[in-house]
Amino acid sequence: MADLIVETGSGLTNSNAYVSLDDADLYHEMRLHVSDWTDASDDDKEAAIMWASALLDTTVDWSGSKLSSAQAMRWPRTGIYDVDGYSISSSEIPQFLSDATAEYARILIADDITAVSDLAGFKKLKVDVIEMEIDKWDRASSIPPLVWDYIKPYGSKLSKQHRMLERM
Image (cartoon, rainbow, N blue to C red; front, side, top):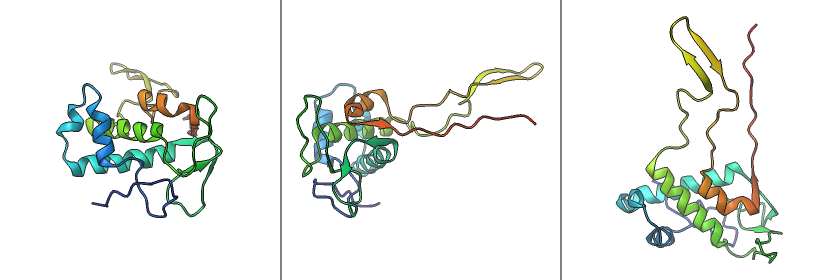
């Protein structure tokens, strides 16, 4: 397994995580209903942290600009302000991002929410005389609601390109 390399805010060229295992454990110590996290091995926790960090990097169009084009991850960033209008330092990873990553990692341990359901996209399915109705908007959100609550003031969801099935 890859080593967990936590971005410190200096724009590391080899980082793969926004939160350390110790900080993620501390985050979950202050929460209820986290047995999925506490029962997991350290290796699984670290893998989930790296996965959550990568998903946040690929599914969010973050405000501001990367500190450096050479950095491995999308944070640290410049030109970011918190919900009260104060500038977020470009030399650190903000607490909201560490918390969002820890929460996302726990959710990923509990269930593979990135897996596509066999029934995704179906609005109606009837077996006798085979009737099927496609719901083009039925797509699982890639970012869990609680994680999104942490990060929504700082970026927007990257849009997915929807394709419609046409019969010829």
